[in-house]
Image (cartoon, rainbow, N blue to C red; front, side, top):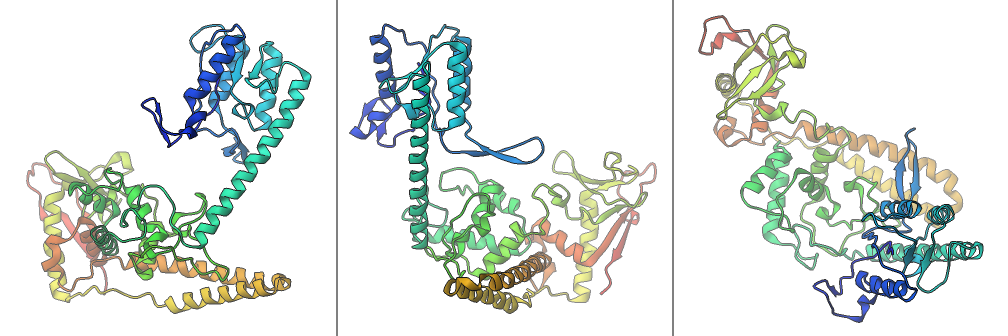
Length: 491
C-alpha cells in the first residue's frame, strides 16, 4: 500500500483528535480508506510510503553536468516506491504485490512520472490501483485513461497556481503584508513598528556605516540575549537578510528567490516602488548605504578575509624577510601573534606578539592623529541627484510606452541606456559607501577605547601604508620595538 503525498492540515490537532471536517483528507484518513480497500479485496497491508511536503506537480531546477539546467518534478519517495514495486520487496523486507493510492492525483500529476509508473507495472506485472477503480495501469485502456487524467490534473494544478499568483500580485499591488511569522521590527499585525526593535535596527545601521562588521553586531546581539522573532539566536545570514530587505524602507517585498533580496520589491506601472501597508524603519539613503555595504556588486564574498580582518593590523603587516602580507594567529589565553607562515606562501621568518605590536603601533597612531588633527567626517556621495534624474527619466520612458506601445522599438533602446547608466552609478555609490565607512568622530584618541577592532584597523589603514616586521634575533625573549618599521601614507 502506498500513499504518495499529503499536506499537513492546520485545522487538524495531531494529538489524534479531528477538530473540523476539513481534515477528512488527512494522512490517517487516507491510510484508513486504503487499508479497508485492500482488506475487502482479500489483501494484506504491508507498508505506507509517506511523502510529506513534496509536490507531485511543481518543477524544480536541476543542474546538468554541462552546467545547463532542466526543470523536473523531484520525488525521491515516489522513485523508491517504484523501485520496490519492481523488486517486489518493501522497505521492511516483506513481499509486496502492488501499490494502492487513495485517488489518482495522489500518484502523480506529471507525465514523466506516470510513464515511469507504467513501465514499473509492465516490467514487474504488479498493479498500481486507486480505490475508486478509475485506472489500472496493468491494462492498455487503464494506461490511456491515466494519461488523460494526468493531463486534466496538471491543467487544474496550473490553473490553481495561476490564480494564486494573480492573488498574490493583487495583494502586493495594494501593499498588503504577506503571512507567516512577524518580521523583526514590526508587531503581529506586520504593520505597526515595535519601537524597541526599530531602535535596535537603526543602531545596527549606524554601526555598519561606522565600519563595524555584521558578524560583530550579531555577536553583540547574541551576547545581550536579543533573539529573532522565532526565539532563535541571530546568524549573520539572518541579520544581513533583514537589513537589506526592502521592507526596511516601506517597500512591498515581492519577487522570486532568484532575484537578490534587496531588489525584491514590487514596482508600479511607472517604475516606482510600491509602498507596503507598514511603516518604514530606515530612510532610503541609509538603507541604500547599508545595501551597498552588505550586498553591493563590488563587495567581497562573505567568507573572504574574515579571519584576516580579525586583528588591528591584519593585512597591513608585512614580513621583513619576504615582504608578504601577514595576519594575526590566535593563541591560548586570548593572546595572538602576527606571523609569516610557510603554509600561506611566506618565508616563515618573522613572528611577533600581537598584543605588544598593537600597543606600539597604537601609540604611534595616536601621536599621528594628535599631530595632524585628523577629522573623519561623512563624505556625501556627489552624484545622488544624477542617479535620481536617471531613475525619473527611465520611469518617464516606461510611462510613454504604456501610453503608446507602438513606440516600444524606439523607447526600449533608450531604457536600456538609462539602465546601464543607473547600474554604473549604483556600483560607484557602493564603492563610495565602503570607502567612507569609517567612524565619524573628531577626537579619535579619546574615542579609541570604544571602537571595534575593525574600526581601529580602518583608521590604521588610512594612516599607514605598511608595518614591516623584521625577523627576531636569537636569544631574545621580549619583543623588540626596533623590529618594526612604519611606512606612513603621504598626506
